[in-house]
Image (cartoon, rainbow, N blue to C red; front, side):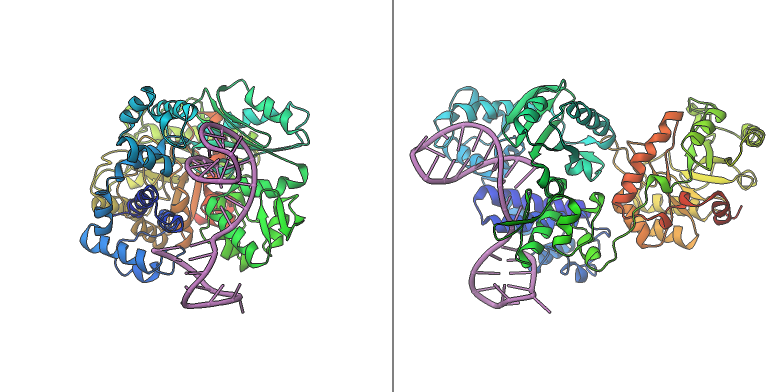
Length: 569
DNA sequence: GCCGTTTTCGGCCCGACTGTTTTCAGTCG
């Protein structure tokens, strides 16, 4: 039972209760508990962990008891009973935009419809419009919503959304009535997957902005258009929401629309304690506006320093801010090099020299060439004959550079028994050895954990690449005991990779934070297979920041000299 | 259901847009 599975149960409970018409604060309590569990950095696998559990935000006596019951018996009676409720199937309806718990219940109570296909049929027959509170328009919207649920995926990878969102911002900037413009929401917080694109604009002519927005070239459907708020769907499959405020309100609005929701609730509650009201228009004392031009002003009003967007998740950032212990998050400019790239010696597209040139253009001091080893046959992996040849080539090239060095390396495969597919005699001649799992992902958790720990214990291995093997939206992480892996990494002074390849982002934010907590250093590397891929470091940095990493936690912020010392080379 | 430098009871963040019920409930973020 993972935290995520427990979180899903409480989330489901909240939805069923909501449809049943339970006390909305009780519903919110379950939602809050689900969120806390989802964001936890340690797995709740033991009953002992429960001692600390009750102290977590939103988890009190009743929910602790429920978690305990589930851990001990493998199920939760309350949940099992709730699932038998005639309203339980209606949770599906909540996925339809515009349908909430009240309408779901109403539709079922009056028409006994409880499936999405059934709902579609009923709507097409024109039966919904006769229900009290619903009309023709709502019926139409529900039909649209049903087809949308089919057509639109739930979330998109950050790297898919980000460039498209930037393009929308650039297009909107052409409107001269835009004073300030920014991305907001989960995109501003750089979550690894994004449901929709939030854009915030300050302007004295809101209607002009709204008109530009709904006329953007990517728009396929206008969902709503108002003076301060509009929503569209784009041809790329995602929704985008625009908010427009006055220039003096921009900071308060930016804070508010960046979220997360949990963070905002905390901030607003702190405001209430100080007799302040905080909303998207500013900070108010009574009816008097006292702050809100910048985000800094909003934080300052409740006595806090600026909290970076990436960590606004109510994962402890507010407590850290109160104690003056906010991390100084790592930035792109802190990085001195990339420790994992491929070339045309294996499955990369550019030569070693071209990769070096691109690294130099990005201001790096070093670049580690870590091509594949023999096991990955299709990549033309380097064997005992070709790897020494590549090392020679790199040595020759290094004579050409000033203030820059190519590091010799390999991405060596970890076999299913934990052995590496190149001999130690060869590995010890390299500057950087990155070890990774590319085969037999379905091993049981214990075997996989042992396998990786064995690689960590090899004296010539420096870095474990993409430690969970997940591909966002395509492949779940393999089963592995991350706590044990990190403990082994710490005691062997080994580095964990944060692979910045857009579909990997592995370690993810939560595991980065866990690594930091255990004192394990992280390498943010792109795994580039092409010179332009070096820019993907952007998403690696974003994930590192979400994981609270500081320059001191990241190994490739070290100068070449200090790096080589750390690697003992 | 959670929580407490106002409280172990009585609160719980706040506002915009839509559609429909002509004064507001439902949904969303």
